[in-house]
Length: 155
Image 1 (spheres, rainbow, N blue to C red):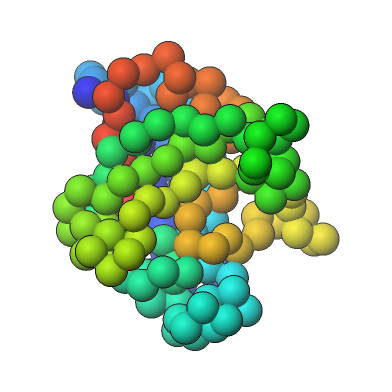
Image 2 (tube, rainbow, N blue to C red):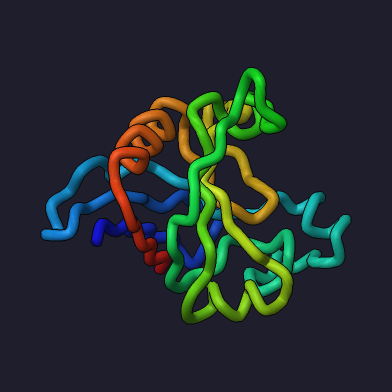
């Protein structure tokens, strides 16, 4: 089974990395820079001002996931390219560890999306998901679409 490995720093103001590996552990693509920080204003407006990862609108929870599907994004989809990227969105479902606890608290999925960069050229915060640069999102989604079952570990 193929696996996504996401490594996020404890300080979510900093980016981590994501890479995709085949069943033998060989890297398919990445590492890419990834943001796993929730937007402060959005988190506070939704009752999670501390961005607690176990609650909705918090930072991305660590733990084990499965890639459940790839959604279309950009033109002709409900997911605007500026917010989600134009190359598709990977939907992750928590299965163990903090990811499963977050799911029990109403965080039923985590997205891996692209989208426009901030004014200073950095990855923007999300509503609690993972964000890649659009060019990296395109590479990752293209690779994921060629695979069957994919697990994901976020640490």
